[in-house]
Length: 330
Image (tube, rainbow, N blue to C red; front, side, top):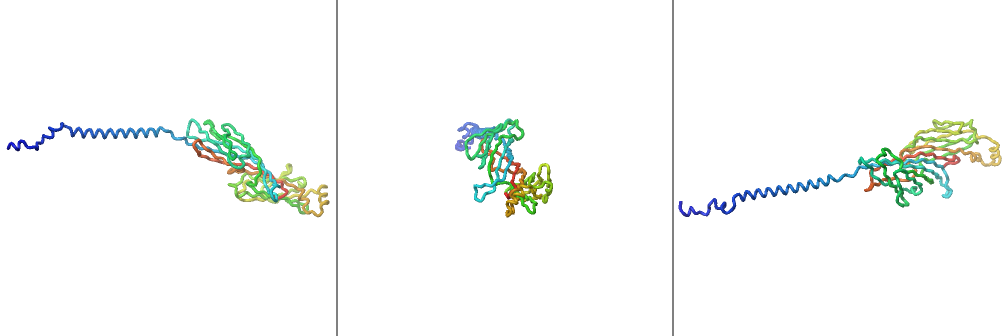
């Protein structure tokens, strides 16, 4: 081997002489350690964010059941102020509102706001019961705050109201008339369930009072199944049961006119008036019925929670006693 070859610049150990042994290996190790540290930091941040999300409790699931029931006594009247005389009904209403709250919170119930709207709401005399209080002064809206404790497991009455109003919007249309021919009076009553009703009418009963101007011993039911004559009370009762939505029923009876001295005098004084006896005979008619699908007043209930509307289940019902004079159609 020559001297030039022994001093060749391509000495395989010259690189190791210029750099510290293990530098390349150490660098690779450091890079790997840094990468692992970054991944660990990212994982901790993700877990921290996930932990903060899981720690925030979800709002409780709340469902409020509200039931409105009305007891109505009404009388057919004629509004003389209207052109031609409009047939209307004078209503006396006693209503109540019950509420039940279902919450996923096992410890307490959330309070809620109950709003009552409708033209008749301003006419109602509202009395709050336990767990309810009025607030606000909005003429078109009645607002109540309701806070039912967890101990109340069933629906409880939160308020009741009374009102006296006139309306044409009745669930039934009644026509009652008495006609006299050959000294025999025929009484006809026809009732139709309005098409605007949401369902059938139940517990439907028609009662006709027989006046003393007719002979009780001659009373005869001429139409209507199930009609019963009560001589003690001087009434005829037809228990119809159910009147389907939009349908009508007709009942009738007849009796002889009592030709008392007073009646004979009326005929004598009015010989040319053919219906003079009819004008003196009044057979009042009463109709009882109920519904589990609606109420008669125009008030509307809505429930609002602290952060907006809550799940709401509303039901309505009523019982009606309607009176008609029986003199003319109404």
